[in-house]
Image (cartoon, rainbow, N blue to C red; front, side, top):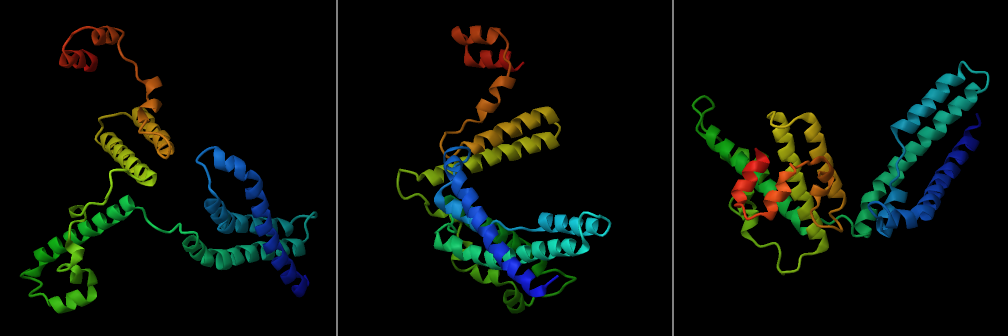
Length: 270
């Protein structure tokens, strides 16, 4: 195997891989934009540039190299070339594409958190700090450990220095939304968090044995389908459950009568 030619082929193959991704994403962009989840030009750019090749491609090349030692159709030199080119592409995409993707995200203004996500992050930090303070209060006057050297503790655990400042202010103390009109992205985040709360409740009911696995699967699937639609529809997890929910025939009759709502609910549930 000619070393100089192999390195040249590797560079050409790297550029060919990038061009092929541009062509594929460019041809399929109209379909990716208007079908499924939808894809804008910024996401398409990231899809082209951050398409890293890793363990699968390298594993296949090693399989070819191993087969070439016992095969009459593939020479050992060809198998070695497979490993070299594939490993080179993996390294180049990880080093070049991987190291510059964050800069590209910042350039396209795609690395900023929305207001709800920032609020969730601040609340998580607040709860973690609160738990840490509670733990330090418990061990601060421990008889076995002795008195605490708080200056040393604060030097190693820097979050304790924010206790007296804004770091210990409850994130819900300030209003996040300054106007009556919510941004569509905020609506999407709120709906997603709400549905994820449902998902957590369903998992809890399954762990407690209150629902069976088949019912849990239906509930989880309804949440997944609703999350797929949060960007352009209101909460609609009931759509995935309609076909599997069967009410007694007399329920419609009870709804059309003047029976008290509690009585209707009793007969329906029981």
